[in-house]
Length: 177
Image 1 (tube, rainbow, N blue to C red):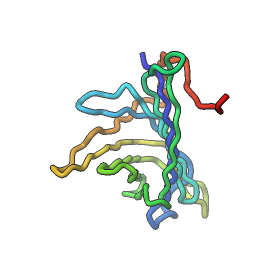
Image 2: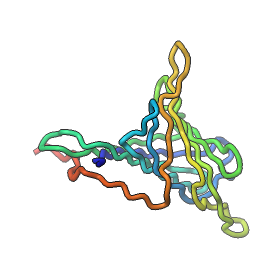
Image 3: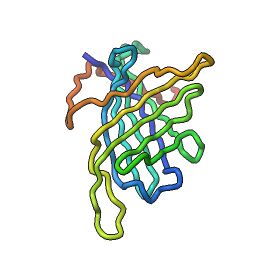
């Protein structure tokens, strides 16, 4: 049984020069990492929300319980990355296909790719996301000896997936006493 570790990552994206081509709305998908032929115990819930060409990606990671002060639990966390800082880029690859690259990790390339349906929102309105049809991604490490895929992102199948968790505590930080 899985126990959750939560990491929340909020990423703000803007398209590379073609903001008018991005639909409005959201794309949501859960995935696991595949490394050395084995799926991770940790899974991620990823939500991409776009409005008028500016997007935000929120990722929540659920991993195993860990030992901490006062017992076992999981740790939530948050990070924000923006295209304005040059740390993240989004590219429209084709109609119904986007790719985001997280450039924060030194000596690695982290990419996410969504294929999606869109819906017409009426005359003069920007199209809207209407669901994810495919999702993939990878982390490629770069060394002096060359580049190698460290892990790939494998989407979970189904529109409403129930994943049991066996950790009933969350570690958070308050103010000192």
